[in-house]
Image 1 (spheres, helix red, strand yellow):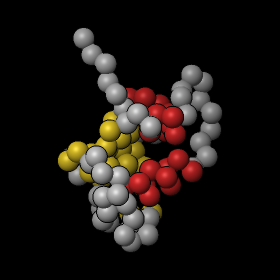
Image 2 (cartoon, helix red, strand yellow):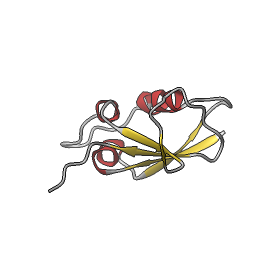
Image 3 (cartoon, helix red, strand yellow):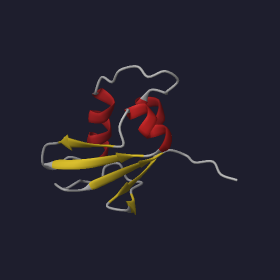
Length: 89
């Protein structure tokens, strides 16, 4: 199955892209997807944090719904939004 990950703010900087597609086995979970993303070797970017470090602090949406349970199964075509903590004023 294929899912789409969309990265925002610091997650986008760390990933080096705004979005990517990920091939996963059927029955994969959000935790499986995050582990697969952590395993990708990405070129070092000046000043950008490592994606694995950013992911530890992120919240996730699956198809625009908050996903707190990382054991949640994913389906082909799902969209996962990776949202790091935001500061505002």
